[in-house]
Image (tube, rainbow, N blue to C red; front, side, top):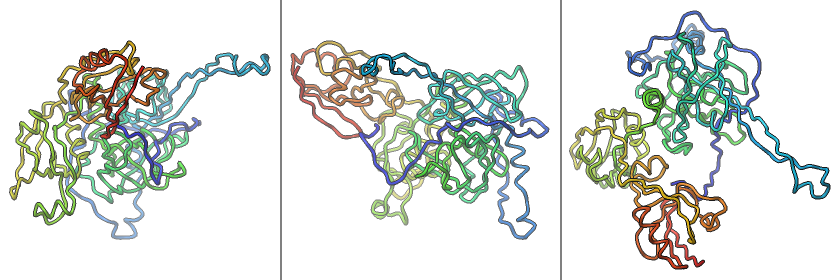
Length: 489
C-alpha cells in the first residue's frame, strides 16, 4: 500500500513533459529500421553476441566517434505531443465584491511535450504514462518532421509506460531492437536520445552508473538502470541505447533538487518495456506474472546465521499456497539467488524478474536450501483473482457510505498496487465529500474488522455495516499499520 506520507532528503522528479515545443528536427539517415524478430508480436530482440567490451588504449581510440550509434538509433525516437482540456471558473468583475461567487467557465488547453520510441516498424510506439496521462489528443512527430495522430492502446501507471499506435499506411518505420540488459554492466557506454526542453533529437552520452535500482520509489515495479547521460524535462519516454544502438531502457526520471540534470537519471529496463508492449499489442491488457513469494534481503546478520560468506539473495519468509513458487517446491527459509538467470537481492527484484516473463513460460529459480544449491522451475502465471472481487457500492446510514469496495485476492491486490498476500476488503473509490472521506479514509485502505467481526468479503462488510445500528468500531489498515475508528451516527 502507499504510505500515509513520506519525507526524503532529495527529490526524485518525474521528467515532466512540459517543455514548450520548438521548431527544428534531425534529418533521418538513409536506410530503414531493422526487421522484426518474433513474428507473433513484431517486436525485435537484440541478439547477444560475444563480449567485446574494451577500454581505449590509444589516442586514436579516444578520437573515435559515437555518430554511427546516434545515426542508427535517432530515427526511431519521436516527439510526443499531448493536449488536455481543463475547465476553470473565471470571476466576473461586474459583480463587484461578489465576483468570487459568480464566474464564467473557461476551457483551457494544456499542452505538453515528451519523447517516445518506435519499437515496431508498423507504428507501435512506447513512451511514459505520465507523458500522455489524461490527454484528449495525441500527436507524434518523427525525426523527419512527419506528423501523425496517435492512438493510445494501453496505459500502465504501475510501470509508468504507455503504448501508442500511429497509422503508417503500410509504410515500415525505423524501429529499435530490445537489448538484453542481463548482459549490461556498470560502465557500459550509453546514449540518451530525446527532446529535452523541446530541443528535438538531442543526443547525450554517458555510462551505466548502476543496475537494478530498487530503492528509488518512482513506480510499483522499481528496478531501474541508472545513468549519468544528461536527461532533462522533455526526455520522458525517450531512448537509452547501448553501443549497438539497441534499446536498453526508456528514460523516466531524474534525481534532482533543482529539476535539472545533475547526472543521475533512471530508465525502465527493456525487459519490462518489451513485456508491456507485447501485452498491449496482443491482448490490450497488461499481464504481469508473479511467483507468490514474500521475502527479505539477506543482511550481514542473516548471512552469518545461514553460514554464507557474504550477504546475497532473498530469504523467503512466506510462500502463497498453491502459487507458482509453491508448486515449484520453494519453501519458507529458502534463499533465492537468481530468477531467470538474473541475480536478485530483494523482493522487488524477484517481482520484477517474474513480471517480465510471458505467461505460460518456465522460470528458473536458483535457491540455496541449507547447504545445497539447486534450481527449481516455476510457471509464469498471473496472480489469481479468487476470491471473486464482488465490487459493491456502500450506501445507507453508515460511516462507509459513498465508497466502492472490492474483495481482495492476489490479482485484485496487484492491480491496485497493494500487497498480494493481503486479505479482506479494500476501498477502491470514494465520494470525496462522504462520511468516509471526512473520517480520513483513502482509496487503497483495507477494512479488517467491523465491531469485532473479521471482514473477508464485500458481502461481509455490507452485512456488518447494516447491523451496526448507529455505532461502529472499524479496524482499518494502511501501509501495514492498523488504526481503530469508533463512530456513532
